[in-house]
Length: 294
Image (cartoon, rainbow, N blue to C red; front, side, top):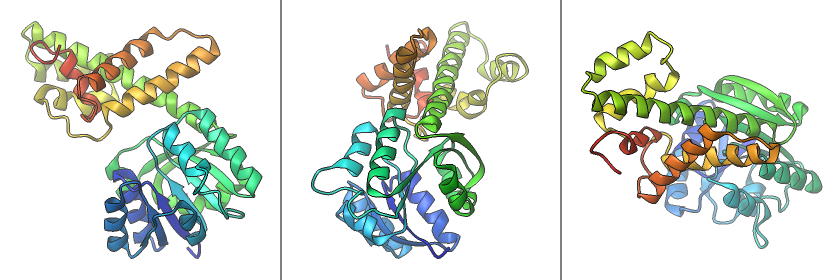
């Protein structure tokens, strides 16, 4: 716990990860977010500094976590010309938790290697509450010796972990996880939407699904919200569209056609087009239930 920590990207996931590690006795010396108010509020809460320059974040900590939104944001924080995290980064460790394309993770790994810094992927397959409670599931990639060095800290954040391999490999697995999850969510929405259109009691349908081959993790997490139209955001439709798109691109590179993923990505992109991208992924039911959105 002698290592000092910093966080870049303190939305709901990043902020709760910082809170968790603070509770575990780690010193969070710096936080940064493009939304300055978020960084200032968290800094005041956990006794940290809200930085306005990325280079200052690197200077302030030994280990820097990043939790940003997409490939563009990832490249900006590490390779932005006038201010970036790799400035003065020799000997620093970066743990990158965002769901971005494997290629970008490899770019960041190469960039870190050139300046004498270490980078790890820590792809997360968990929710906001898991971040706060230290119950994340982490898919890790990069240099395994650095992973082992960071393991005591990672154990405070997660209920389980799996080291996958070299740079980009965890991001590939995370893309597969979210691809399958999104397909399952879309399929569940269609099943419940058709059941409603046929006049079935949806509580009964959900119970039958749970005892048959229609059972799934998303039945447990999303079905009630689909029926009740309660789509408070835990994992947004916009992020679902992005992540299914990452899988789509990987499939194209591999020479594969994945029609179910293509259709799912199109559905989530449709949500974004309709202004529904901020809803939880369960909001895909708004496209399938009769009498909701077209």
